[in-house]
Length: 121
Image 1: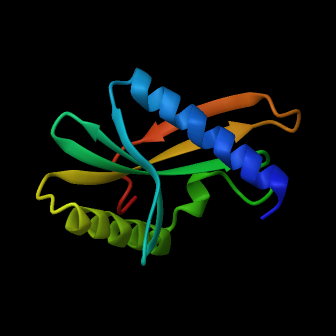
Image 2 (image 1 turned 60 degrees about the vertical axis):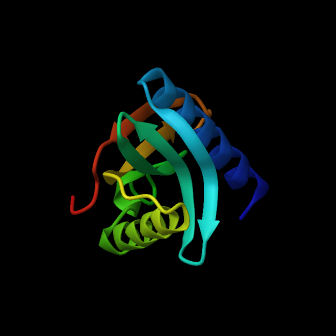
Image 3 (image 1 turned 90 degrees about the vertical axis):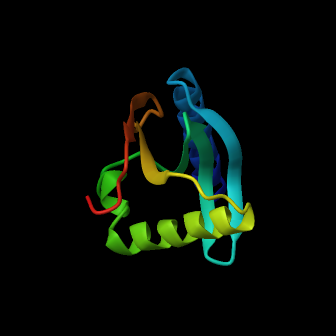
């Protein structure tokens, strides 16, 4: 991954965290890893555990951020969430969300969209 992609991805994750906190979420973990992969953000909202994938784009050349979270990716995210719940010995309601972050070609923020409960969409 290029330095630019890492930098823009990290910026997207920070912006997503800021939005989530402003919307009443509590950030528990960031960039949590297990055998199944990495979860960008793990948060709480009320009694629910929220597992959040952040997708940041600077162009729609390869589609929108939402286009990248296909059924295969959703399945992988669910495995990571289950790994976390097992690891922490949690038996609580949970869901998988996605935050889409888009910049234009001059790196100006265009939108941040929080999609709730994305599995099966």
